[in-house]
Every structure is written in structure tokens, then in C-alpha cells.
Length: 248
Image (tube, rainbow, N blue to C red; front, side, top):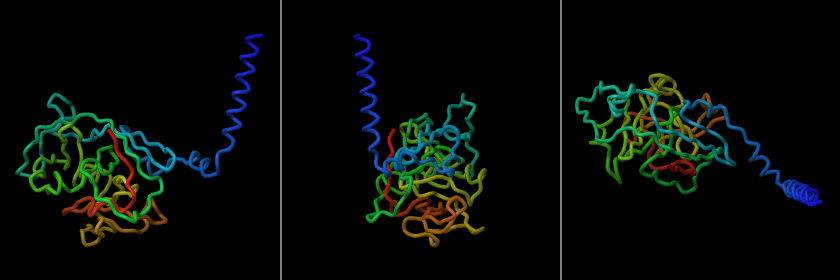
């Protein structure tokens, strides 16, 4: 008898639970049914991507898929500096695996009040390496820090987080200089330094370092950033859109 009562109680509980669950609004059902857009399937294997409500969640270990002098010399991924900067000086940090979670809007929109980019991660590239802005510190230009960038134009900060302030040349060399390279925190994509066969300059983009038109991945048109050879390199006066979040 006790067993039957428990079972009956459980059945009633489940019935009530499902009844309550049936009151989801069409908007909530639509958010739950969102699928990951195919464009986000271009990440390397060290990145996990999924949709959570109105956000695309990107989880990365932040380890580059190319060699670097910032790996330990005993590591197979170690490669001594062989770039073109005669002033190269390795910084005291080493690449350390991270656990970074980035949430970007699934449907990005222009911000009514543009926000400055923070120090630290402002976006993520297709190999899971994060983008940093054009500063070495609060309002400090990259003038000296550039000399610590490895042959792929990245380096690690104090906690070992490897990052790009400039063009991720490994990606542009392997994918193409005119290709999609990643996204910033506001959900708008970042493209390489070539468009329609021409090198993009700062004069070709707005104050936020982007412009709007159709791209291969976004045939209906979208605002997008372009990497250029000159400061501010990836992003200008702040995020064009409403930024998501980053945590580690």
C-alpha cells in the first residue's frame, strides 16, 4: 500500500510538472529551439560552441594551433622565434591552457551607447585564441609590447593566456587574408585585412573599425570588423554592438 501511494504521488507530481511546463510562451519555445548557425562550426577542435537562449556560448582552452617560442622547449609545439622583427624580445610568460567562456549575442544589434573595449579578451578567433584590444595597459600603446609578439603575432600575458592584438597571421596564411577570422564580444564577425582583392586600410572602415555589407557567411549583410596593418588593428573606439560577456 505504501508503495502504491508513493507511485501515485509521483505520478501526480509528474502530471502537475508537465502541466506547468505546457505554459511556455511562444517566445520561450523559439529560444529553446534555436540551432547553432552553421557559421560557428568553423572553430578548431579545442573550442566548444552551443546556443544558450539568445546567446552563442564559446568555450575555449585558448591554446594556439601553431608553434610558438612561448611553449616550453621540451614541448613539441615549441618553435624558436623566426619572424622578421629584429627587436624581438621574449617576455617572461609561458602559454598555459585556460578555461574561457565567451557569450556573444546570437542576433547582434548596434548599441545605442557604444562601450569602450576592456583590457583582456574582447573576442575570439577561429582557433580559439582570444583577441585583445590595441592597448598594452590602460591607454598605453603597443609600441614596446609589439617586440614580444612571436612569429605569429601573439604572446601570453601574466597568467599564460595567449592572445592576438594584431592580425593572426597563421590564420590568414592558412585560411586566406579575406576570410572570416572570428567574432568580437558583441557578436559581430571579424574579417581579415583583404576585401575584394584590396588591402583594407583604416580609411576604409568607421571609428569602430568596421562597415556593413553582405559577406560569404552573411549573404543578407551584416556589420563586420576588419583587421588592418595599423593601430588600432582589430577594433577602434569600442564595440559597435551590445557586448556579451567573458569569464575564466
